[in-house]
Length: 361
Image (cartoon, rainbow, N blue to C red):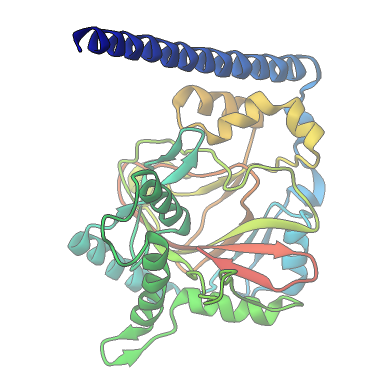
């Protein structure tokens, strides 16, 4: 009996050593492969990379400014086809009403706390300088929570999943934002949806899931930045990939409250920077992959590399009530500030040639 026990224990020790040995080999193999890929892209960029040559000029580098508060079809067409870097619609929503809504959202954030607007980086979701309000998180956060639930081995008895909670929260958000006491109001994001549907040749509306229920995605969420911010401005993209005239991801921001630039002693405090970088092929992407990978890295060294490589940005200084649309595949950042609050409403637009614009958040 004791001999069999000793033999069994010995076999278990041997098997454990074999498993550990194979795990170490896999880890070493993975590191070796990653190092080789890094070296390859480093070689390509040092010999063939030239990011400055991909900076757009002429009309493609322009920020279109509309002073009449209207979204025009020709402006959307230029933006979606990358014949412009951004579209700035001044006075899209009444300035005084915007300030009032902004103040109400600030008070809501003080009462409820809000949630950090997570950004997707090479290390996964990380915290940012931006907080979000509303009845649901951004969809990418819900997806990450769903993944974590599956990794942990189930929902621990929960009757709804994080994705279900997202779609249920979307409905609550729509209904709560339209009511103001016993009355109804035109919520700025609803105005945006209506006017995009009217302006775009093929219409616009909420994206819907591809499952049987076909539930609608969110139409946008309030975002709040409070000074002092950690970052001078976190340069990033919301979708990594070359520009394509037939499809793309765009963001829409309606500004309600902006920091006082005079008090901050920085004319660009709370402004939006966007760089007219036009990477239009995978080859150009691979040639500059090392620098471009910094767009998904939230660390000071990477940000300094990007600022040096990208050069001078387009500067947009929005006022309360202004709407800014931009290609989310171009590098951009919200400029940090030392004091004050910046409140905006953000949604995303999925563009595909000759198709309805799909809005989500």
